[in-house]
Image (cartoon, rainbow, N blue to C red; front, side, top):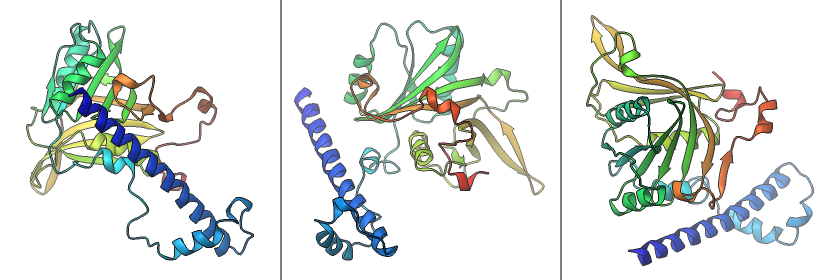
Length: 294
C-alpha cells in the first residue's frame, strides 16, 4: 500500500512538472503573439526561439483552451462519482463545535462525521485514503466559537482554509424548516476571478449532482471577499415561490490554498495566501474581477 501511494505521488509530481514546462511555453507564445499583433519589437528573451514558437502557434487553436491543468486532474471524477466526505473536529471539541459538525453532516449528502479522539492528522488522512474518501472537512474553534473550516481534497490536495464568522446554528434560525434529504442545487454568485473559480470548484465538488426536481438550494454569495452561506428549501404556492431557511448560516473568508493534503501543509507549496500587507488594499477584490462586481 505504501509503495503504491509513493508511486502515485511520483506520477502526480511528474505530471505537475510537465504542466509547468508547458505553461512556460504557452506564456512565451502569448507574449510573442501579443508583440506581433501590436506591431512591437519582440522581447529580447524570445528572439532566439521566435521562429520556432511562431510555427507552433500556427497549429494552436482555442478549442482545447490550452493545456490540461492540475485542477482537471484533481477533480477528474467530479460529477461521475458521488463524493465521499468525512467531517471531524479539532481535539477536545466543545459542545457547540460538536453541534456544528453534526449540522454540517446533515447538510452535506454522503458525508460521515467521526469523533477526533486521540487520532492525529496523519492517521485520519491515511484512513481516508484507504477508504476512497474524496474530501476531509476539519472544523476548529476559539473559546467555544467555530472560527476555522479546512477542506482537503484527496488523494493529493488542494487544501483550502476559511475563517468563519457570524455562525448561527439551526435552532437559532427563526422559523426554521425541517431538514431535507434531497441533493441540493448550488448557487454561486460573484465569483468571477480565477481565484473565485478555484474556490467555487473546491466548494462545488463537496456535493453530488442533484435531480432536476429537487427543491433544496444552497447559496454561496461573495461580497467583499466574504462568502455568505445560506441553506433553503422552496415550494410553489399560487404561482409564488416561498423560501424556508433550513440553517445553519455563516460567513466564510478564504485565507489560504495549499497544493497538498492537510497533513502536508508545512511542506507543500502555497497556491494562494491572504497576507497581512493585503489589508492596505481595501478596495481590491480577490474572488471577483473588478469589472464584474455586482
